Image (cartoon, rainbow, N blue to C red; front, side):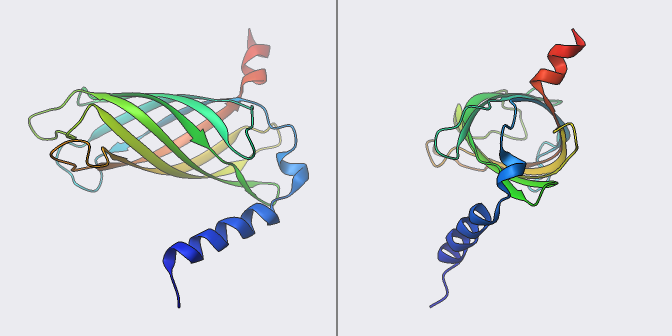
Amino acid sequence: MFSPRKFAAVLMAALIVMTAPDARAGEPDFISLSAGWFDLNRQKDQGGEFRLEYRSDYKLWHFKPFLTASGVSNGMTFFGAGVLIDIYLGRRWVITPSFAPTWWRGKTDDLDLGHAVEFRSQVEVAYRFDDRSRLGLSLSHYSNASLGDDNPGTESLMVNYSIPLTKIKKMF
């Protein structure tokens, strides 16, 4: 019988197996800058979201840790840390699902996310340039996983530019 979860698991396993070893070998750590649209789905308190992330090159199996900080034009902020996995589709395209518990502050009259702890799940699709920098588009979902009495959740659509940390160090 068809199950969406089984299909997703098989698809994820196939993508990992199909990844090009030469594409992922020696990937650097990244600084990722993002800008986009906060609360695009619910549209209770929309705004611009700006995000800064450090994505480590350290791997535990296929997973890499990262740190994230974002601010929204409506005054909300999110700080957290999580894990991500890079799935390579050939040499140029990278799909990066990630998960991060975050500390949220800044409820407004229009949008209260229900708890100080919010979990961000995200998927990013990025084009990988010769210098290993990436330009991508991501969709994020914030949810408190029912830790609070109310769990409205919200989404963000972001444009991301990830630059290898070694390239930044060369500038200085």
